[in-house]
Amino acid sequence: MENNQKKILGLDLGIKSTGYYCKDADLLGHFASKGNVLGAKANDFATHIESIITEYQITDVFFEWIDENNAPKKNHSEHATYVLNGLGLLVEAVCARLNVRCYPVKPREWKKCLFGWYSKGYERKPLIWGRILDMGYKPKTQDEADAIGIWYYGKNNVERLNYAKR
Image (tube, rainbow, N blue to C red; front, side, top):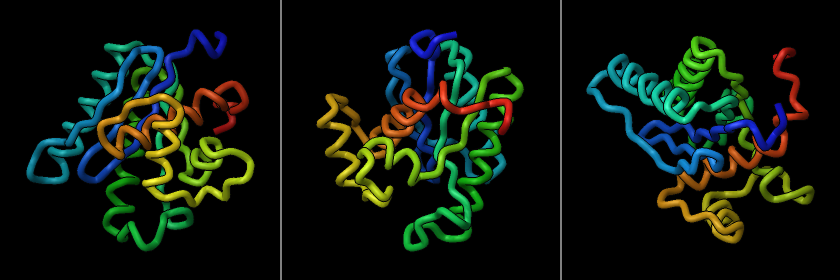
């Protein structure tokens, strides 16, 4: 399957809101998981991700993966990193169940791809927002802008990455 036949979904996982983008499905949006306890929110999140993947026949999912080695220390508490890792594992589980390829992406990787060879991958939200607008996209939220950046990384790297070796 060639890159232009793939339906790549970019996900910006978030504590309050998750952004998503897939150009081939003309899909851009964000959602907040519902529920008062973490388990209910996790179930709602997984259900929402599964419905997007199945409804739009997504073939590849790229999502931002935060861990203790690549988290921006000032912005992510230990709890936030824990929850974001949990969301990442839910994405992996949903993709495995649906037989969809799934790729975690470090924040610096997708930012370097978005800004070019001169980038060190530390660009902050206002620069990301401006770059996405300069590229002709029209996100409504920062989560959507980040999801477009993650999708852009996926679009440009899906053929290079060896999913089998993950």
